[in-house]
Image 1 (cartoon, rainbow, N blue to C red):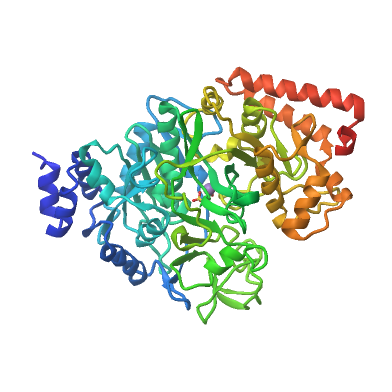
Image 2 (cartoon, rainbow, N blue to C red):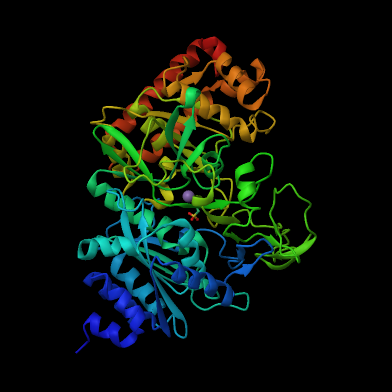
Length: 625
Ligand code: SPV
Ligand code: MN
């Protein structure tokens, strides 16, 4: 007869590891851990509590086993993922659903029994000869009604180390909750490694999300977006759980914009990966709550949000001393930083594309030994750093951390911003007419060009509702319906906005500079507080020239010309109408599209066509004011 989990663990673990687990008094947890010890067959098991010496042990392991290397600045390390493991692998990520159930064709699903057999087979003995690490975290602030406890099993010290910087500790959370903890479970193995300590068996790379057991399996990958359970893997579980409980899990930053007279106004912002989310959350002069994932609850008719994380796994490309002073300083100070897939020089300094420093001629990067001009097998030049190269830091040491960042009650949200990578359609900043207009036209109709954050072709315009498509574990129709319903019994509506940092002129030149977004956010802050008027266009409400001119002067000390304003804020009717056609086609193919979506799209089309008859294809703000 098989041993009970407790007996099995007592036999298998060191007395220290065993007592750490038993103290938590959680039967389900013991079952989960023993199941995967049996399956993965590690040589030893390390149970990590919230104590400093345990965390220090993980740090040490990631250096000793070669997953990370120390750099010149104290606390800085570098990790490399395999050359072909540099981003989220959508093709091998699937939501497991029982009995042949499917979601929309844009969401990758797989029969649950088939998926489990596949990944459990792959994980058989996968940790042979290795140490298994068991870690506990809390998704959201500690002791908060928002938060979800989680357990991570991994054989990668790099993953466990990254999570330490990114998530709040959870061992005490499990202790507090005992058997009542409703926790998420993550099981990861990097599998066999090559001589560079990167994954060898990429053909067996899998990320499978089992909603029924709230468990995610990740195998034969190291890239954070595939391996760090608490990040996008937990997000998929949380979207599913939230959909049953009437709250929202969103791909959103949370930040305070600081208005006149010391006023702080909190915003969330949803952007697809590599579209300026972290740099927005890190805007100089403002304070950050989070840069990637938010849980939103309704409390007394008001929207409140928490950052699920407490650190940043941010894109490093383009970070420079002038535009990004906060990140620049963090990346040059002796704090704990894990760089991934950057270029490391022989002096153990970090370099990345877009850094305002002299580019080294050689070094080590994601392709191994690198020199300027090195080409890949297809004859393409390999850049010094991968476009999806990242840095991992904790927010706790950062001066721009908002004072309410760890508040268990969350922060009150006054504005919600949606933005994508859009070359030709939307104006730089615009307010929605009302909740449903915002949710549908700014959120559910969002399109963005694909980027290096996922494997595959870049620059392809893609439908990406609420910037959350990659992480949906429920149908698109249901997801949008839940967002619409979220507005139903609100007493205080957050205002919904759309921004577009990527608008081009007729010569393909960006119409805005990177830091112009400072102005858009300060304008939104004034708007939410009723301090500026707008001009009504067929697609929403846009700023007046005078208000922007004053803000450009006071914030950026920049002369903002009428002609810049006109180019940026001209309503592009043909482009907007084509977008509506594309989006209507998509929602026509979705079985459970809420009626409100078609209603808002039809109303927007009608406004655009009426304006087109009156003014022609391109309408300047002056014509409408
Ligand atoms: C994103 O791609 O949206 C990220 C990084 O935030 S990842 O962990 O890959 O999802
Ligand atoms: Mn993200």
